Amino acid sequence: MNKTNKTMKPMTKKSTNIRTEKIYCYVDETGQDTKGWLFITVSIIIENEKIPLEIFLEACEAKSGRHKRKWLKTRNKEKTKYIGLVLSSALFKEKIYFRKYDQGRDYVQMAADAIVGAIEAYAERRMLGKTAVIIIIDGLNSVEKATISRIIRKNGIFVDKIRGMRDQSSSLIRLADTVAGIVRDAEEGNAKLQTVVNELEQKGVISEI
Image (cartoon, rainbow, N blue to C red; front, side, top):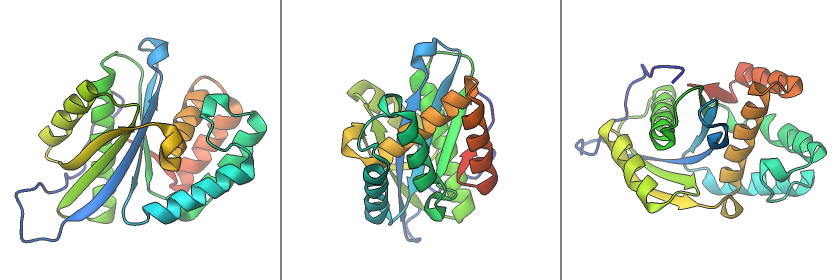
C-alpha cells in the first residue's frame, strides 16, 4: 500500500439522533494481470446527484463516440474526446479517488482498503456525520461481496448495501473504468496521460489516497 489513511471515519449505525447521509460509491479496478506489479482501485463517490450525473455521462459517451465500450476497447480519438468532455467538468471535483499498489496479490483486501480510504476522505472533505454507504463494484461475486463488506464494516463504516454491477449497466462504473485505465497507462509510461493525471490532481478532480 502506498499511503496510510489518517482521515476521520464516518459515524456508524449506533448513532440515532443525527440525520443519516446516504452516499454512493462506484468502484472499478485494474491490474490483476500484472501479478502484483501494479493494482489500481478507483472509487467515485456521490450523493443525491446520481441521475443527473448518469445522464451527463451518457451524453458524453454518445458525443465522444465511445458509447458503452470499456477503456481498453476504446479508440484513442474517442478516449481523448471523452476525457475532455467529462474530466474537464467541475461536476466530478472531489468525487474521484484512486489508490495504487505496487506489490501483493490480495486484491480483495486491497480493493476494500482503497474503498475505505475513499469514503473516509470524502466524508472528511464534506464534513459528513452519520453516513450510510451503498457500494457498487464492477463484476463483484458473492464471495468477494462478503469479504469486502466485512472489511469495510470492520473499519466503522455503515454499509447500507453492497452489490456487483457490470459496466454495461452504469455510466458511473464506466467512468471508474476510464480513470483506472488513465492512471494505469500513466504508470506504464504514457507521457500524455501522465500529464492528464497531474492536471486532474492539481484541479482536484481526482485524488490519490
